[in-house]
Length: 137
Ligand code: IDP
Ligand code: MG
Image 1 (spheres, rainbow, N blue to C red):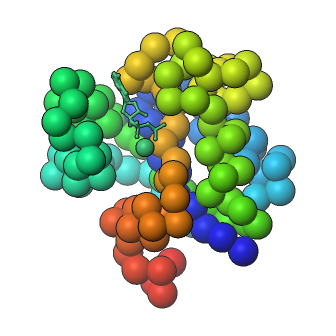
Image 2: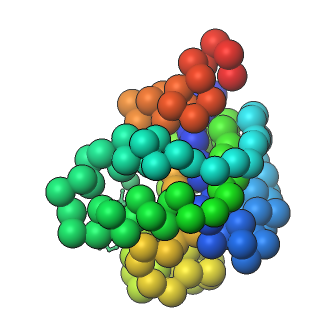
């Protein structure tokens, strides 16, 4: 059993896609272990994307992620990290295959509907950042 962390980004929430996105994870056979909505403080967004801080799009990305309500969840199941990354599709909506969340609902960066942890280490760190330590979760 593995846990991963996802964020339905502000335009996903604005467009009413919370149910659509979560149902794709559930249909796959994964479980929603924790679920919440809220606004990401700018400081937390900067920390969450710290590995991209030297990219030219960093400020735009932080502004976007803090521009409205998001939905955050812990998704649980066998190989959850890789399954969720496959279900969301490639980072750039132009490259994301139809059938994936980004391939079906997004058109251009940085607007790609959903974030998901990309490794066991980032999953643990992101769950702790947004939900507290795993023991509390
Ligand atoms: P990921 O979300 O698929 O893990 P990352 O490379 O970690 O992709 O990038 C984080 C987020 O930054 C992306 O989901 C997207 O919203 C944004 N982003 C990535 N590359 C670009 C770009 O070239 N221009 C604008 N935004 C970008
Ligand atoms: Mg990433």
